[in-house]
Image (cartoon, rainbow, N blue to C red):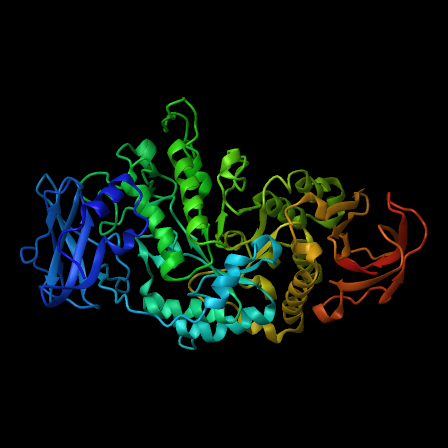
Length: 628
């Protein structure tokens, strides 16, 4: 049911920035009024001189259905009889200087397929969700007590039809879910599915903060994908972009003729490097719009978390700005105090209203306390991308092995700060585009060495402290860097070496999930201990991962030289077994390894009470498991 005027309570909450169900108020909502079915249209445009709704139901005539202003809150609304779900519409916004602009609905929950820019009246019917058990388990079990291994993908280029057409949501559900489960990942992470005008932006320049892109199907089709994931035991995380928005004329830029969502001063309101505008986090209604969007995806689509993009660009007023081209805060500093308050409120509300969801920060600086509780001054995220680990490790593996001994600190320095935050280790899409090359192509050496180095990288990622994220194509060693214009190079799997990468990722996920030592409270220093981090001349490192249930010793040889008779310290006597060897022929390696059962010798070594001699295969890692 609805009226053409919104309640004063709704409008008051919105003006204060505290309407957490804003998506049920503003926008286009089918309702029944005076015995007639129709749609209530509402939009925030406080500095407009007039607003009307135009669409397929009135021949896009701006004089047919004017909206009325609701008091002093700047919201315009009207009930239009005879309009049904599926109708296309826009708002004709008249500015105070007499111009009329056609604008998409900022709160639209459905849009037409690009290049069209109209909003679509969504059918908010009752989707037959079947994921109640998943949601209940998510709320009960802390994420830090479970393995967290994320497969990141761009839905339009994961796989195509033979004609080159990308898969729709239903086809993705049929093909993606079993594939990801077979590899052993616990979650998928989708690059932004919020509506966006340009394919090449990959969704990071969003125009529809409440609408899943029409590229792959309807809103209910997207719900069906999430539902299929949950029923199969797979979580869904979305990339979400509250840091900036594009200046497309149908979008949010100068929406009512003024800088409504952004700052008027370009020193605050524009990212020149990206050609985008910055949200004004100090305006109540803007904060409410963004937080409402986050809550909407968690509520209406049951998603399990949001990866917040470009957090650093929000935190720093001088981010990517030359001296003199930014304005300090009221204390004279470079910190964006309003953005800090917004992020804290965002995380607090998402956790309060949807227990168990993950809030993940892509934050590329050393900002303190990103994942710390807000009561201790933190931002309250669950996880932060460990960009330092990613850059140091990739830089190291680019080096010719003969020079690695001089850069050993690239492997070891990260443990100086590995437990200062709750980290996620990303090998993401950002590292395989724009001339950076694929993960495999980054590795040094000839083809054999490149493959061995990639196996080393993957084994390091899965045994190092922190949650895991791997971008699509990395799991089978794609040679070409990623492009949104084509599908992954699936034909490579006909090659046994590339199929070997896939088997390695599958087994790494299996070992990771089977050993709480690798994931249980993985952000706590008690789970990690160096055995030896000083053997730079031979480029070998070794460490212990431990929990109450198990102990694992991991040894890495970062040179192509096999090292026989290498003695390694062990924390306990008895039997150890080699539970994974990245040099196995099964993965495409040379198959140098050790006996299945290894008896620890009562020989103290490397500050450990026991030891064993090993054959270290070239450019490879060994995982040894203690057998109590």
